[in-house]
Length: 101
Image (cartoon, rainbow, N blue to C red; front, top):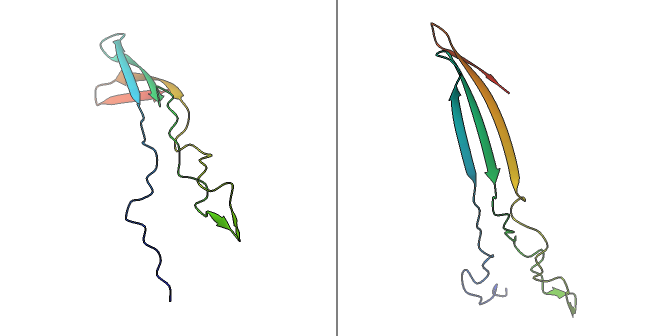
């Protein structure tokens, strides 16, 4: 039986992963019992592309060297996403009820 190889541990390292998620919340009191809540959320705010692992680590395809070995073709995260939310909160004698919009 042949040994698996002599490559050291952690020899293949993927590119770094950077991501910035931000959430902003504003609560507005309409009256003593009614409040409105506005929320804005962004995911990957800076829209930084984080690359995934290479698609194929097989260097040899039969007797020839593979042209796609080590090529990175996908990203590890999604592009920038923005979400807006609105919630109305009604306070009654026994507790709070909310309507999410």
